[in-house]
Length: 218
Image (cartoon, rainbow, N blue to C red; front, side, top):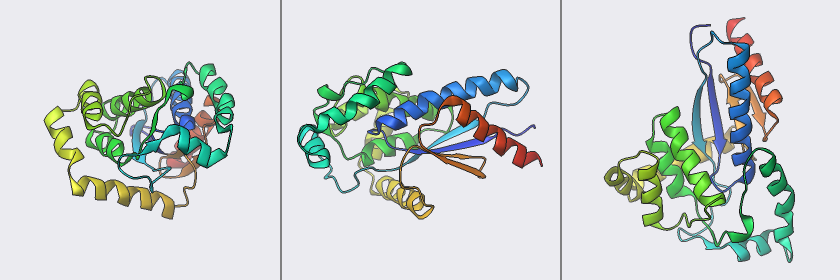
């Protein structure tokens, strides 16, 4: 196989299972490289999905969000996902998150980057900022600092955050994912042939990669 296999990942930057799924995908890709040392590295592209598209641009209080979603004591719902996160090296600070953001702006920054390592840096930076550093992703200065940290041009990122065209592009991609039947994230599409929903273990993701690879060469 001479062409790199493609992996399209539909996810949100405020979805803890998406962060866990990213780590498990990275582990699956390491397993793939070990088993197929002569194959080119798969090309990963990140696509937007807004868990809460109805949130206002300024977001809302995280505490109010959790209470509305789960009721009183809703924060306890995150104990299991915190433990799973720790199993893949993520110490997510759910109790320190102050703001639940609308993620349209964050997704527009991810879309600026070329798929592959450059886009992965932006995605990783935003996930780390929200779940580990508990930064406010509704704050434009915070977003610009993060964009610059991830390697984007700050001036271009600022222009992008104020672009109606950029927002329309993200909304269109989000709607396309829903039309495809994506209801929960992360959602993985391997070589446009094999779809898999959920933050599965690396071995399961590897199996899907190899299934897509076999279908491509059949």
